Structures are given as C-alpha cells and as structure tokens.
Image (cartoon, rainbow, N blue to C red):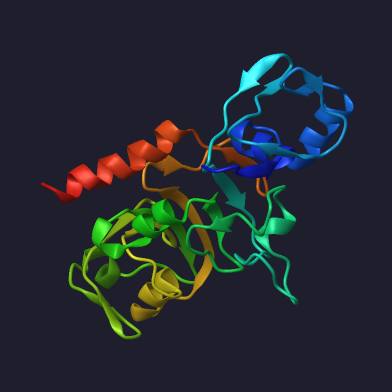
Length: 241
C-alpha cells in the first residue's frame, strides 16, 4: 500500500466491535491514540505509518469486515432508497462502503450478511458453490400430501429448482425450506407452485451462520474472520467431493 489513508473512525469500526457513534464517544473520552498522541477529533490516518491504540492497546486493522444483521420486516436491502427505509437506517455502518450479501424482501426477516468484501460476497452468491440458505416459512393454509412427498424439480419463473429441502414438523402450516440459489422471490415462487401464499418468511441460517437466539430484530453483530473462512472452506471442500 502506498500512502493509503483512512478515517480513524472507519479504521476502528473495521477493527473492533464498536459502531461509528460509539467510536466518536471513545474519542471524546480520550481513549484513542495515534502513536503517542491522544486523538481529539476525526482525522485521517496513514495505514503504513500510524499505530492506533484504544485504551493503550494496539488495534490491528482489518481491511474487510463482516456483520450479521437480524433484519426486521419493513426495510429494503438497498444502500439508498428515496421511498422505503433501508437496512442502513438500522446499522451504524458507512453505506458508501458496506453492502448486503444478496437481498431479503422488504417483508422478510432474519439473517442478512453485510460486508465490504466484494470478492467474498460474489463467491458466496454463486449458485455453483451451493451455499445453503434455510428459511422458516408459514403459509396461508394447511400443507397437503403433495408438497410433503414431492421430490421433483420445482418450476418457477424462467428457472427449474432441482436442489432444495423441505422439513415439515407437527405444524400444519409451518416448515423449513433450504435453497441453494437466490432467485427473485424464490421461496415465495416455490410455495406458489404448490398453491400456497407465504404469510411469514424468516431466514434462519446462511451457510454455517445461524441466527443467534438472543439477537433482537434490528440488531447486528460483527462476525469473526474465522467464521467467514469456515463458511468458505466448508463449501469449497464440499464441492470438491
């Protein structure tokens, strides 16, 4: 890197669990230093030269960051929207830097990954890598025997879904559905194929990343690099079998 500079709040947001607003408070509390100097305002730092300390502990920079948001209904997966509220109205991340990995419909809840790593996101979203997404689905009427025993491809608009998995419980209108692509309204289209309307949809798992039970709607957590690498390595090795 040649004289690569970055705002100190972005640096700390990428390298710690703190949000931008929390970092501004830390600076006001004089807990942040550049080299030996206490930071008094938001400034640019040089990644090649400067060392950043938080509470006198050296903070190492991470070029890429990954977050898991428990998306509530009512928000669209866009960086900017002139009509609807977006996920960036929920999270304290730079909408000019970060983006969602794929999309959930406005009325869909659950696991949404947000990152600034475009290469990783592109890999995860490629259907050939078979990264599973698990949804909790509730429909408008009781399941019949056809959907419970169906094993053939499911035809949706312009596509034939060959790989999927239904899991039915004692509930007559609720199931889990695992898919491996991310076609437009795919889950809703698949249920419509059997004559059902989806009345509630929640993504509960993305690859190896499970929605934490204690993560409230609208809240998000930072994912470790280990979790991200495990996801990629796990499905890379699976595809080589």
